[in-house]
Image 1: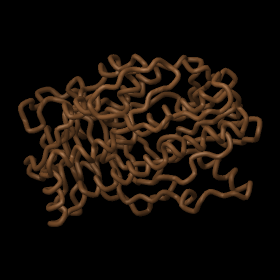
Image 2: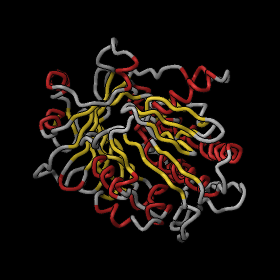
Image 3: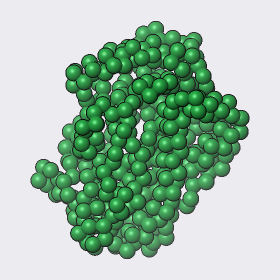
Image 4: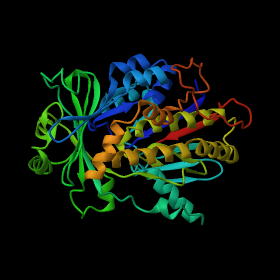
Amino acid sequence: MAKIDYVVLERANEFPPLGSGMSLSSQAMRVFDQLGLLEDLCKIGIPTEGFKYFNRKNELVGTLNAGYYYEERHGYQGILVPRPALMNFLVSLIPKDKLLWGKRVLTTMQNAQGVLCRLTDQTTIHGSILVGADGAYSAVRQSLYKNMAMKNKPASKSDTAPLRFDQFGVLGITEPIEDLPEETEGGKGGWMLTLLPEKETDCLVYVIRLPEGRLGWRIGGKVLSSNMNDHENFRRSEWGVEDIEDLKKEWGDSPAPLVGNVGVLFEKTKHISRIMLEEKVFDTWFEGRTVLIGDACHKMLPAAGQGTNQTIMDAVCIANLIQELSADSADDIKIAFDRYYTIRASNAKQIAQNSARFGSLLTSVGMLADIKRYLFFNMPTSLHFKGTDAILACKPILNYIPNIPMKGVMPDETPPMTVHVGQQDGSNKDTVTH
């Protein structure tokens, strides 16, 4: 394994049981297979069979079969997994002394010798490299940009502009539901079901099957209030009873796949959370000894289910490059981070654009939108292959543990995740991840 001393700073005291279902596709599954974790991972999820789309009468209007196609062409079927279960699974793999709970970053400072994090509990922690993996409202990114401005090399105007939102999602995971229909257009496998809007005031409804008879779900629409400030927009939190009752009144009678209407989803869900939806790929992914991954540098719309998968690819890439460093000099680290940006940024931008286009296809209303969706659902399979193959073409693995054979008929187009800096030892680095 990697000879990298590290510590993970987690701002929460524990992970709340919030969120919905998440999709792990072929490109993410391969590295779990390499790590010997695939069997255990699959135990908490359900294989992805495909996607089905319905009109407001709950009538099927389109199907994309994905399960067999993913496995045949790219080696792995992909799974749908509850977000809390995935978080707990990943945490179980981290030694307890390496994961520090309740450690929220306040500011960061860095120089040629290292990087320092000041935390809200008035403690500090020092390392050679800081990996900011703290989401769209990244404290690490904000501190990084402030430090850059103090050095008279500010981040771009696009980077420093606040995220703007006109869409939101309300989501959750139901308790086990008895007697869910098995012989329906949704089937009983790991289907992702989408109820399409017909007019601007309609909510978009996503429902996915999860293990134990649970359903992950998300409904979306315009922001509830135009008075929300930027700080509130970034927050993801449980809503109060009053908020939920308002939503029940507004959308409770809206149709929903498998359960009849949205009201049933609310009634069967203990923990409901919200997320503001925006797509933005930042220009600045690193500076000095600080590097960003995941939503901290590329926030993607959820339509294509690529946010988590792209974050995993970031993590694999940066781990490979850090492992290759023989020393923690600022010059060597810059070369590694430059290579990381070269490998990942263009791919992330393309995936973000694809997600935005797919989201627009699903959320647009009117005759033109209906025509576009009809053409999309009825296009030749070869064209679907072409689009999806491009997304799944990169299937990175870790360079410093034993390789595994390629699976599937499609080649791996992952760029070399390596940069030859000094001697490949890597025993004298320490990394902080937040």
